[in-house]
Amino acid sequence: MTATTPAPHSAAPADVAFTSPFQRLTDLLAPHAPGRAPINLTVGEPRHALPAFVAPVMAREIAGFGRYPTIKGTDAFRRAVADWSEHRFGLTAGTIDVDRGVLPLNGSREGLFYAALEARRRWTGTSDRPAILLPNPFYQAYAAGAAAAGCEVVMIDAGPDTGFLPDLDRLPEDLLARTVALYYASPANPQGAVASRADWLRAIALARRHGFMLFADECYSEIYRDGHPPEGVLAAAATTPEGFARVIAFNSLSKRSNLPGLRCGFAVGDGDFLSRWVAFRNMAAPQVPTPVQAVAVAALSDETHVAENRRLYDAKFAAAERILGTRWGYATPPGGFFLWLDVAEHGGGEAVALRLWREAGVRTIPGGYLSGLGLDGANPGERWLRIAMVESLALTEDALVRIVETLG
Ligand SMILES: Cc1ncc(COP(=O)(O)O)c(C=O)c1O
Image (cartoon, rainbow, N blue to C red; front, side, top):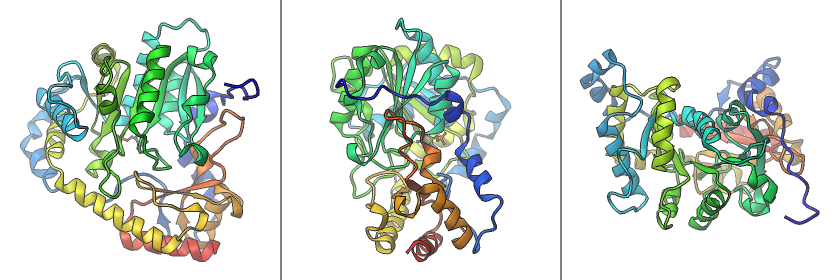
């Protein structure tokens, strides 16, 4: 860091960790009637059809609801996650430790939250100001976890000048020395940016050099364009002599398999971290019901429904290209299912979200509600607007046409 680089600025945890963006949006829009029949494109909740095998597997396994599930998950679940991860990320069979290196999560959200507590517990740094680093914008569970772990929340801007990924090269040494964990999402929500192997290797090296955990949020890893699956953190880590040390990949069936209500995710990676975390989780974290794990095993062994899912998103991104053109800096992102539009010329995300609701009935979320104060003391999300491409093609097209008609 140069002498002129501003010191990191952290918003008070209460600001970013305990304020739901969706509650803020409700507060903003509630006094106003929608201008037309509402279309809601706010929450990143997949709405494509459930895979056909879900109901029969659930029915077959129904007796499992009569027992408490173990926190560690079934052998079949951990094996399916290891097999899928090795295949998907091009790892040699057996690279993943099925016994110590895989855990089921009740959706990746709770795992991302609880992981901060474990990272803080096993951190050996000496600073009395431990910090957890987040990309900015960020997914709320990271900030909530960091705050619950008693860590300072430090947000690293991930804007256009760094390819919408957090700039890890500008982090001050004194901050790195007190860093407990770094959250890093790829594909990123909301920008859809994807980390390269070099990006992952940089983050991994930093984590090891400074003794912190790297929490890679990969829950959008299967929602990608043009037949280019995003590089995973595990593939990058596997090329290093230390393997998965200090690296955890979080993933989920929510986006991949259109099963956000199933509540099933998984953590894979550093066996030392996961095997100790499981002891804490056994006292406090939610288990995953065994019928749910059985559905996950079926889902992870089928790629047909995932390819179909991508096809449906592709059609909506093609519609966005057609309808938006290059307005508001639009370019189809390589991953994820959000549009991230620079609407500064119309007064920024909050003004535009309000206007689109009042004039067009389209519900979107201001980017500034998904981000906080960055290294320079400004909120980098304020000029942006997020649109979730989760509705049907027809509704999505309708919404995008309304947006263009309203904003011009
Ligand atoms: C970036 C990101 N990470 C994690 C999650 C959590 O998803 P789940 O708990 O359904 O796995 C979401 C959900 O929207 C998300 O957008």
